Length: 453
Image (tube, rainbow, N blue to C red; front, side, top):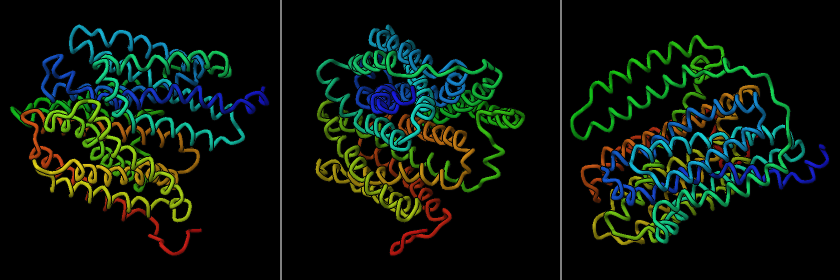
């Protein structure tokens, strides 16, 4: 059996890759579709921003749960179940009778796609012993590439078949991955069912905390909801107290207090994602509603942001091999700061070429930051902490993404023009400065002439 798996390991990786690309793909295609959905359901941008927030909120809550359920019921069974859930949602969502129904579909879509990553990783770790690192790197390409090119894919689809097409496009991936999974994925043994290991209470308190924060932030533009701030403060306190009494908490605050460097890495990653996703989701809306580009044209323009990140990634890998993570993180932070500052030079008569230059600079920063942040995390944790640390790392990504959609919801709801884009950039500049400071204070030296040992 081991010989068969090794021989066909590339088929196994392809099967899992076709599944795990669904989460990042569906998280990013929505950026092009938001304008159409606003018009379809009569929404303000703040309302529409929940389509982004609810996806990341559900993903943050579901991933750790699905990881444990994968151990209990078997990863293959969970993988197939996740694909079925995504298929059902992809049928229902295009026929949503109202906005709350569509919002529910997005949450369910996030839960289904979040099943695929942990179960797929579990299969790779147990089934591929030779070349496991290469297999995991290949899967990360599936994930990062699908997220990067999601807006461009969405642009072409929406131009031809309107917003429901971003759900229908899932079916080729679902069907192919499902058929291959039945025959290729191994039937690994399931563990003991221990639902008590899952921190449902912590997850519920986390969701209440984040929803309270989002509701408060989105109210800042008009009448401030102080009751939402109160919910956030109370839920945060209860969440912290509850997690400290759990043997397997959703977020291990004790470990965060013990390893301050890792805690600051999470903070840095939250800030990077807050800034990057403000542009990742904000630019398509700006291009469509201010410059009146079509969805197809907006998708093509977004290639500047995605493409430069993909091109820079191999260079980042080589820099990490030579100098570890600090140097590429500082370079990425500088590009992020410069790109954001350049946005303030944008005005009504600026050429598309100048916007593409700015997007290219921001794309380069993402190419440096993504891989380097993951490497920085692994450089400062023990091997037996990898699972927990990786879970918190993903949660940090989701928190940053949620906060970015809230910031866009605050600024873009009243009116969308260059001045409001500048307001987003000014807020992002503060977080860019924080990212640079945190990159510089990471342990290690900025070695430019001599590889680290």
